[in-house]
Image (cartoon, rainbow, N blue to C red; front, side, top):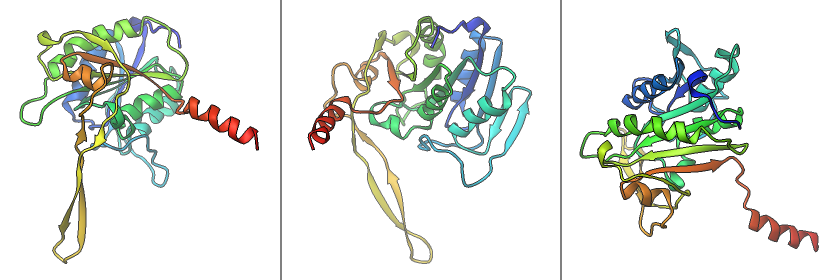
Length: 260
């Protein structure tokens, strides 16, 4: 994909935290600082953990908030498809920005994330796409100002070069004030174990129901991973790709079956 001329770009902004999320307003402000042609299509309700899901068994509805802002009764993937395949067919987006998510999307969490999924869908449509997330601890306010301050520089630099086809970016900002960010690191997707548990409860009629108490285990962090970069106060920029093929295993299997 060719470099993006941000000053002339049509930017689509979406998220998974919902149309009223403060992170979405942060990203809209970032986008409007880059271009005059900004459109917003985001889920009506919080869709965290929705992953790359489509609403195939029910219709989706669109609520027009303003001429360039729409809320969709659906997933982040639905939002990007609605914008790219219906709303903006006169001139499709030149860039998809997803976020800014409340909390990180790193390591194995990218497989659950609706924020990542929206960027993935933009990539599938052939549009340069970036997912952005702001780390935060549960016991204090989210530092949206960090993402607001640093995102324009990260985007301008990253979008100034040609990207390989079927690739997109995952950007995570650390939980520190903007002035305390130690720098920007280009990282790889790390790994974290499932550190949560299942909580069983009883409803008034005695039936069991369950909460998934998700808490990733971030021990044994690799030096070049997204997790280590963010936890050390750096911005993590991770290039991701749509092709999930494990090449080493593919070669071993090909040799195994070719010999049969």
